[in-house]
Amino acid sequence: MGKIRVLIAKPGLDGHDRGALVIAQALRDHGMEVIYTGLRQSPVQIAQAAIQEDVDVIGLSSLSGAHKTLFPKVIEALKERHAADIPVVGGGVIPAEDIPYLMEHGVQRIFTSGSSTEALATYIKQLVNPEAEKLKAPEKIAHIGIAVKQIDQALSFYTDTLGLELEGIETIETEGVKTAFLKIGSSRIELLEPLTTESPIYRFLNKRGEGIHHIALEADELDERLNTLKSEGIPLINEEPKQGAHDSQVAFIHPKAANGVLFELCQHPKGSEA
Ligand code: ZN
Image (cartoon, rainbow, N blue to C red):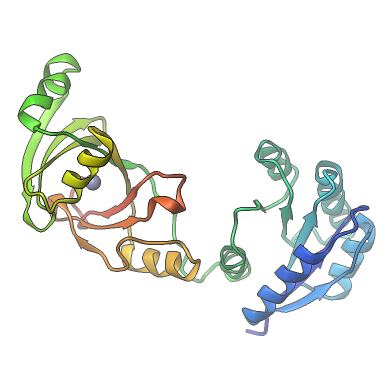
């Protein structure tokens, strides 16, 4: 298949296009053909240019705050010209609360100021070439890890007070921890007790005291997922999967990627009910 063709356009009146030019260059670096319309284009001009240039996707950038009127107008103009099949993605300065409105009005995806150009490029490739392998979003919280000094002391709150069922106790020698799993629906609470002063849980308790340590997300295709995260510049604690509890493979994402929250990605062997 030929190069992916992308139209980058700035509808409306805002007079800055440095961001749009950076995105255009980043997509070219990913091997795409990028057409940039320049500043101050009307929705109709953008739709016409997209059809004329036979692009695979339109990227709209807006800094002016007028995205809620302008983005839907571009989609309208495409529909009127029987070109509603050209997907539209948006970015720029767009408050999170406007995203559902824009999606309802036909925008495929909004990239916020925290998104990387790598994530945008990956998304466009998948959008244009849907048969390419696509990673699903994690489907559930596998467990929430809670650091405790002693499982024996901590357990009664979970079993007696909350009435949760203790599913099992497991020692993970490589991590220097003892874990207790308590079932809650199809998720679990994982109590973590350090066994040695080398354990990351020991260091966590010393620094922050007892409390929530991490959130684990159920995630299949872990190797591929880690490669994608790496290519998007997401800081990882484990670049390769390692052995976790219940025969799972796990890897941790650095908390600086997620507002101070330590996330674990956790893949259970196929067929296990975890
Ligand atoms: Zn965990």
